[in-house]
Amino acid sequence: MRQGGFSLQLAGRVAAAFRPLLRAAPLLGALFLVLPAHTALALRCGNRIVDVGDSKFDVLVRCGEPTAIEQRSEELTEREGAGRLRSVIVATEEWIYNFGPTQFLNILTFRDERLVSIETRGYGFLESAVRGDSCVDKVFATGDTKFEVLMRCGEPAYRSVREEELTTPFDALRRRRVILRIEEWVYNFGPLRFTRILTFRDGRLADVRTGDWGF
Image (cartoon, rainbow, N blue to C red; front, side):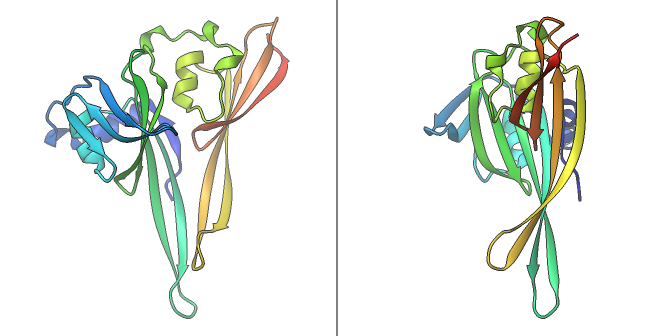
């Protein structure tokens, strides 16, 4: 099973596989049809629109390369007749599009190569202006992506990674096995402030704890 992970470089490698077939698709900004829960019906890239159901290739052609990619997978097992089980690996990718500080950040989720959701976040970032000293407690919010935290706070002083296996019923006939990727990031703000320990589960911020005094 392919393991989950976050990579800025991976975004370029994914697009490179399609590049011989791509025409130029510059990121010219974004226009959204947004629902109250920050779920978009569509995303406009320049004069092109991507919709739920589009393939990853369609999105690359219309919007260009994503800024970052988060990957994970799960295994669905169902019973087929007496004593027979069939397993299917479902791959999930989150593509993050950062259009800059005057446009909203967008997260496009693909399952098995097809776009299944478009999530609109807060304003994007000027990546060349990342400053760790501007990172304050109030910017940490449950559900933030690793990319958002990196853009606000820079690289953590320390990272650790572990995996947990979770098996749950999917429906009456199938069960789901998921390998959760859990990361802990430690931010050190100096000897006059406490450290902050951030826990991410499959790329999303799940918990923030206060550690010892910094150094």
